[in-house]
Image (tube, rainbow, N blue to C red):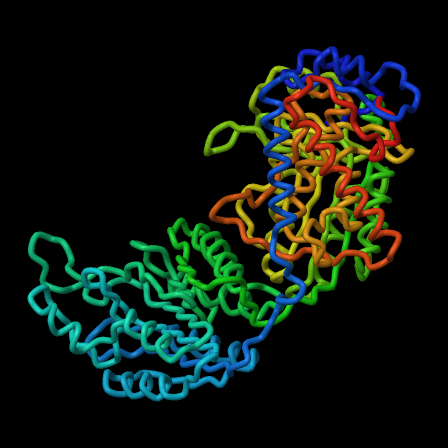
Length: 624
């Protein structure tokens, strides 16, 4: 729950396992000292010093990021050329039913991206070779080349083979015939790169069930397997429709009406989405295909292998921004009342308009009802186009009860709306840390936003291929998503067990995480000064700024935001999220905030003295 000077709620719930220390309670309720030119704090704990050193290094690393502004969406000087092949009908192998539809769909998407596309269906081995040779001959140095194949494919040892329509059925004694009658996928990559192209993208939707399933196998082990990893050359990017050892689904059920395979029905619209770098196209496809396949409990997570230096965009980013900003101070349950959440919502509403948002909906206090918020979100998502950015911010009370599920008990975050009923019975259940059904909490509290609600809203945006930024300023807010989303940048004020502080910043009561986020949007997070705020810059700013603000009220441990996707991790792709305001005064103010934070962190990592004076500019020389 969000901290304020209204502490009656916490006094009624002193059995909570996550209560703040008595020292923090005193610091928040005690008198405010007079303004001074410096604030003295002690940093004797080596662990705290190490934490500041980490924050400083993160901020310095974000300042050293290469500028994106001059390169975002840069198009190659050469032409865009593609060869797309789909094969459904095999003479001796099991037929496929959607491979040619997949090829046609991808060819259409590539043509819309200004590719000169050669589209082929049902090729036998000679025709396949002829089509490849013609494609190689069309390529010139500096071109961007795409090869897409949908059909059967197998691996023999470390070599992947794409199977033509006249591929004979083989048994385990006929391995040499595979090389003579099929196409070596690795050789295709090498031949494309040998033409000096700037980028070679190879997409293989060929990880289906083995076409030799009925081969004669000694010992019961098939000789030919699904595709194996290709180690691409520099400048090559390879995407498989499934992971190594997995099979790719043609359909979710026998009556599945979608004309495309599970991979292509997700890959095509993501490929068409403006402003996504190639690696993000691959990552989003991987995430969404995996989620769709999991609906029938089938493991399928497309693999990709990236040897492209820098980021390549098929379409430059030019997103419109839409926002929904929610803040609640006036709770029906008096013990929940806050003083700064509505300020947070209004400040973030204004900051989003400042970065050029098309429209931002502001919802506060009693208007913040679940049905209305859900409607406003759906309307915003419907108005946005693929590649646009939608921003959802929430400032208010939240908590994380233990929920009983089929997978086991665990904490999940819930956002409390103005009419939420948190009475003594609910407090007692929460304090006991008893696991109960989520529906029981919902029935009791009535007006809440659950992690399931938030996940469904994110799925709605993912289906529209929208970029999403979610910011939640409340205690225990780090558990609001039930699955991974590559299109979602999620920031919570603190983790699922942590407290979020509300204090005076710039002369008004605010949540410190909200204050930091508003500063970020106004340009303070643009560490390298290229006019764009990226994920990594935003995360570095929020981590450092919130930690410093929380230290100024004596919080221990420091309040640190939770971010998703985590940095660094395999799922992290850096993306430009916002452009910075161009107003000269705002740019100067943002620069002062950025340099002030850098000085502050540098000071806190100095070993010479246990007590150092801090610059008061960021908080007006006052703490609570």
